Length: 285
Image (cartoon, rainbow, N blue to C red):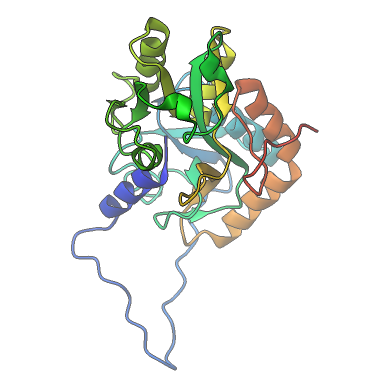
């Protein structure tokens, strides 16, 4: 997933060697604004070819469907630049001018310019459906003590597990992988079903589609406030180049005018949607 930790790592790789900030002279002219690079003849998307259920080269991901919706609304052909979502992704796609938008990007990252968010989601606890743990909705629940919880190492959820004394027995799965050859989410859920772990803590948009397709699993969004810890809720935007101000405004307009269709795509995929306050599930309609 493109969690804030991953975004920060990508940011370190985005600057060319020896890059320095532009000096500011009080009262003097500012730097010339960079020309916008966004294409006006195609909807050009930067995407990972193997980031299911989000983006997939065969077009089956829910971000692919959102890209198709926007291309249709713009009346332009949809074009992709494919590159694994890892260190160097932004530098070698969006920043290189090969494409104009990353469909899913966590709000607040400085590597890209964020559009308005088009959905909010949360980390979730996945358990067997026929288990008392299906009643658990917070990581502070005492029923989780002493259990083996699966978690993506280095994700924001690990701090919560540490705070609640759950990290010692946790089973860690890698954050930085080439999804063409490894699927940590799939492995975690397979381990859960096999009884090798007792529950799984996952980013909702990754877990939701898998749980929707498997009646033996149960998903509980972790949206309740935990004392002393930030909520495990994140707003997801589209990422564009800092220079592309008009393009950002056009995308914001598309998001606003097509929010109902975007929500429908996400719900059909099984993505758990949280309201703008991050305190409750987003109502349908």
